[in-house]
Length: 224
Image (cartoon, rainbow, N blue to C red; front, side, top):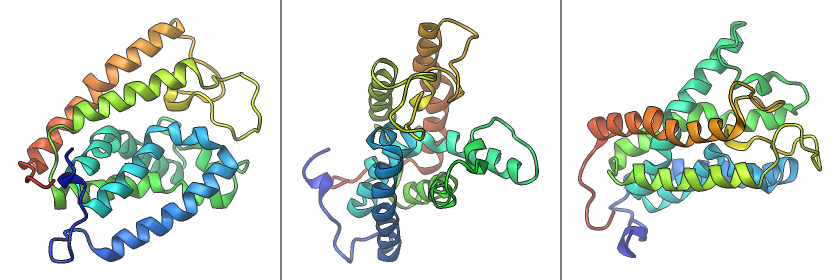
């Protein structure tokens, strides 16, 4: 990204409504300090939380690359989140991703903030519709995601580790398995981690990239 790429659009150039930028910024102004206080700073290592910040920057800068990176990374998983949440509402747990949304151990306010998982994928689709999908989003996202997974696997706590507070995140980005309460036992831990590092790009992010490029791809202009 060049310096020109990171310039703010003028009022006549704007493609994202100002009210939407302000509402999203207000939401982030509430979420960040609340999450920091209740979950701690490591919570922002989750893919979805990291994408919140890129979306914020991408909206204000109206930068196709900055909105394309989170879209290719979390669109499909967040659609699964929406389906699992909808299933819970009718008494079905599809994959368990949203079990915590119905856990009284998390305050209603915290669970309300976490509803961003439900509307963020639709917002990102709207943003790439308005700004276009940048073809370099996939390698940028893979680089970021791999760095986050390595950090979460080798440094962050895993299920069963002692924690400073009950809400401290463990097994961030599911590097030890799909559960926050226990590590998976289907295979050795390094094998699961390697499968995640290879499987997500091949089975999730690459197909999403192809879909977004087909539907929203356009050559980015010199300033974006």
